[in-house]
Amino acid sequence: MRNEVNLQYLIYNGKIYPTTEINFLNETAKPSIYEVIRVIDGIPLYLEEHLNRLRKSAKLFNLIISRTDRELTEEVMKLIEINRSYNLNIKILCYGRGTEIEDIYVYFIDSFYPTKAMYREGIHTIFYKTEREHPNAKTSNYKLRERINQSLRERNAYEALLINDEGYITEGSRSNVFFIKKEKLFTPPSNKVLLGITRTKIIELCKLHNIDVIEKEISIDSLEQYEGAFITGTSVNVLPIRNMDNIQLNSSKNDIIIKVMDIYKRDKKDYILKKKNYCK
Picture 1 (spheres, rainbow, N blue to C red):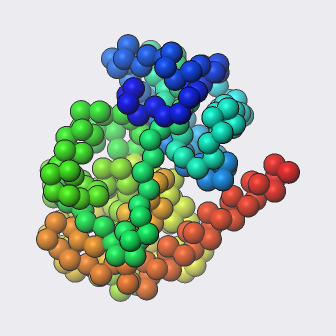
Picture 2: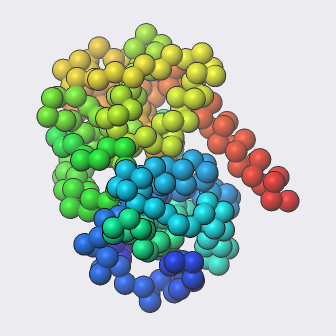
């Protein structure tokens, strides 16, 4: 965990510390939940939704977060100001035992965003057979993360699409996934995946723009019938998939994917502008 902490200061249980003074190693035996929030122009994107999901994750483990949303929001904004960093990801990491969240860390992390070429051409993805124990909770599994990262490095891929024991795609290792067929979106069922903030936002926006979104189990054997695919996430927004292992796709040229990318981009800009005007 130490190597993911970025910049000079973090906030631990409401107090500011230099990042060099806080040791995470003694926390590894405790259950943890977390959220990663993207900061754009000093605005934490969709922060309300992230805090709501953080509480839902805690509830799944029978844990209570005693800090209010207002207090957590103030800590996030304070972290942005003290580090003078306005375009980077922030992580809220919570450790608990029994029924209480005992420790809350708020800090900047190393953040990697797709290049323009990736949006223009699409990304290379691979399949990885695994299934998360608590799909609706955003929890840390550092050993699994490192195994997946090793596979990504070995096969020069950007993301891994997770396959469960029944042969169905559930999600990306750090993203959600959508498929396109006959101008409709298909995505794995909500009870099988982490309910990503960007995923939820995409579904809401598609309904507003009369784009059908269907939740269904998607077999790895059925993938060639789809015309395109994309992943969604805090850092990637809406990112077209060029291939899934040996299955080639022309996702970045698909009209529906281009439309979804555009409506999400506009919603994101509107949110940031609204928050900036509110702060004036």
